[in-house]
Length: 541
Image (cartoon, rainbow, N blue to C red; front, side, top):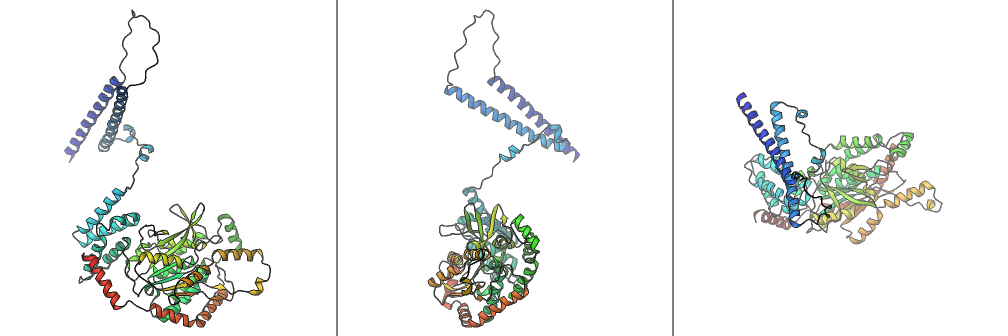
C-alpha cells in the first residue's frame, strides 16, 4: 500500500512538472508570436518623419487577433488543469492550500449556470420512466417510482412527456399485479397512487356523477359548517371524506377541508379542536394585541398560530394525501399578493396540466399546514405568509365562497362526468335588522359593513342558484341571532351560535333529507361495466 502511494505521488509530481513546463513553454512561444522583440536601431539610419496613423486592420489581421485570443484561452485552460492537478497532489502529499496559492473565486462559481431546457426535461423524464420498466425487483421499482414522483412534483411540465412513454397504463398494470399477490405491499401501492396522481390520472367518481363540498370562510363561525356536516353524516351513514369526490375550502373552510380530506378527523374531534383553538390563539391581552397590530399589523401572535398548526397537522405534504384511494381531491384557496392586487392560488392534493382551460395557478408540493396558513392569513388578525418568495393572504379577500372555483376544477378533473350534487356551506349571516338600517352608522359599523361587502358570499350563491338545477345545488347558510365576530372566543357566544345552527337544521330538515338522498345515489351497474372496460383498454392497448 505504501509503495503504491509513493508511485502515485511520483507519477502525480511528474505530470505536474510536465504541465508546468508545457505552461511555461506555451507562454514563451505565444509571447514570441504576439509580442516580438524590436529590431536593433542602426545609427546610420536617417531619421524619418513620424509614421502615419495605423490603417484599418485587414481581415488577416483580425483573424490573427482571434487566434491570439484563442491562445490565451488555451493558456488559461492549462492553468486550470495545473491547479486541479496541484490540488490532487497536495491532498496526497499533505500540503496546504496556502502553499499552493490556489483559490476559487465566487465569480467563477457564479459563472456556472444550470438551465433546464425542454430537451433535457424530456430526456430526464423518459430515462426515469424506462428505468422503472426495466427494474428487476419491487424494491428497485419503488425507489425509481419515488424518484419519478419527486421529478414530476418539481417539474409539472414533464407530464407532457409521460403520455408518449405510456406511464399511466404501466402504473395501472403494476398496481393491479400487486393486488393479486398473496401478500400485498400497501406502501408500494401507495407510491404508485401518488405517481399516478402526479401523472394527471384521476379515478372515476364513486357516485353517479361528481359530488362537491364547498366551505366558506368565517373564522370561528366554522362551527356552523361542522354542525351542518354532522347532520348530513348522520343521514347518509358515511364519513364525510367518503361521500364527496371533491372538497374546497377558503380560510376557516380550508381548515375544515384539510382536517376532513387530509387527516379524516372525526367531526366531534374537529369541533373540540375549534373550541381549543379559540381559547389558545384567539385569547390575548388587549394592550398587547393593539401594540402588535401597530408593529406587525397582526392583533394575534402569528408564531403561536403557526406552532399550533404544525403541532396538529405535522409535516405531511399535500400530494401525500393522494396515496389513499378513499381520500377525496381537495384544494385550499389563498390570495397571492401582486403589485397591482391579488390573484387566486390553489394548494391542491392533485396535479392539473397547464392549458388554456386552466384559470388558476397552484401546486401540490407544499405541506398541509403551510397551505392552511396561507389560506387563513386574515389581514389585521395574522401576518401575511411568505412562502418561497411569494406573499399570501387570506383567500376570503377575493373568494369567500369558493363554489364556482370548485366547479371549474372538477370540470378539469372529470371532463366527461356530470355534476351529481353541490353542497355549499356558509358559516352564518346576521339577520337583517330594520331598526338598525334606519339609523346612522358609526365608524366601526361602516368598517364592518365594508369588510362584509368584500367577503360577501351570497352573490355567488344567487348566481349558482339560477344556473344549476335545484335538485343538484344545496346551499346551507343559516341566519344568526347576533353578529358573531371572526375571533369569537367567549363560551356563551359560541353556545349561542351552536343553538342558532341547530334551530336552522330543525327548520330545514326537508332540505337535509333531500340532500342526503342525492348524495347516496351510486354509479349504476352499466356505468361500472363501462368504467372497467375503459380501464382494461387503457392498460392493455
